[in-house]
Length: 172
Image 1 (cartoon, rainbow, N blue to C red):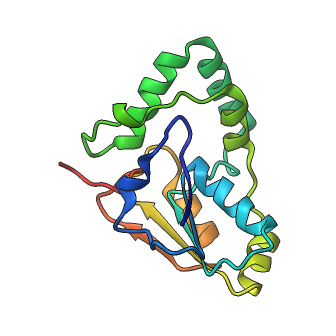
Image 2 (image 1 turned 120 degrees about the horizontal axis):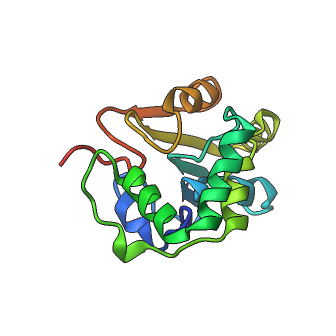
């Protein structure tokens, strides 16, 4: 399996073992990594049977002022931004992500926030025979689950996990 990590994270793949399929023809990604995983599959010429998008970062319904504010806050104080960000990633669980932190760059954050999920590109991947699945946490504090769900649900199997946040984990 080819796996893509979320923004400011590394090696968090083990946190999603319940959702992943270990196969050479499977690609998966978490949050920002879901965007990267999709682009990898879209541009790939090798056979990929399944694409698993775990809490895909979805900000195309946000105002430009939201994006500018996020970038400014990150650029001003990375450590405070990442601390707040990781608290929102783990909500509503009390999971400790310290072992997975790999502070990202402002360029990565900008790519994450400005990425546009393109229906035509998704359809092209589906037409190649790749199954795409999306997993969302109902209580996600990073992305608006309703917007993400309404975008993906008409296109691909989309699962909204009750009492779970961005990490797809619930209350502890």
